[in-house]
Image 1: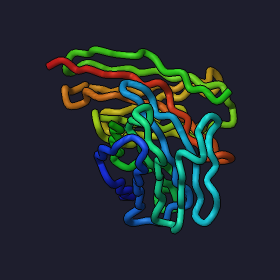
Image 2 (image 1 turned 135 degrees about the horizontal axis):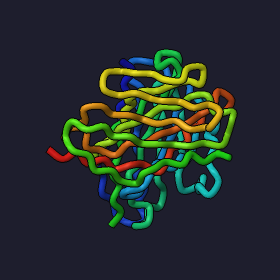
Image 3 (image 1 turned 45 degrees about the horizontal axis):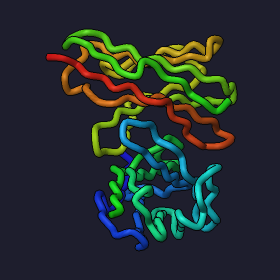
Image 4 (image 1 turned 180 degrees about the vertical axis):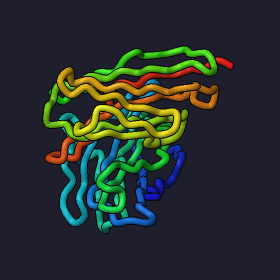
Length: 116
Length: 112
């Protein structure tokens, strides 16, 4: 089946630094990739949608300059949390869809970000 | 219009019982309704999905029932097992936007 790999699974960083999270579709070309944020015991909140080679579309209330998304190829999207603060600590999850997934959504395993 | 309302928030079922989780939506443009299972610290995994042209879909112990007129859909887990203990999310999307809108989640505990 379609596989989405997300890396790293866990990261701890200091306040003020930037962290990059990678999302790769391993065996299919992802037409669109999505980034979600999930707080403990809560649902997934869509942050942004990205298409290869174009600018990401951010959801209302999500800071574009803080959460930089790059979708450089049909198999790779990255989320960079810039100038991280403790309130950015969360579980970040990507998903991707494409013809291989019959345009359903395959999720990565998530990244636990802790900002200290 | 974009919301998907999910209930109950939590559910406790005995092993072998039936777990039922319900969702309701308002946006009639939604045309894809998946259910996801999520274990702690992991991403959601697709369980089963349905499109509005059918009223029921069954895969193994998992069944989706879909009521288009009521704008409701539900997940039934038959013969629930302790390994089914997880958080379940319903979701919905439309071909026009491809955005997947999630319900609030249901924490299922299946007692041995």
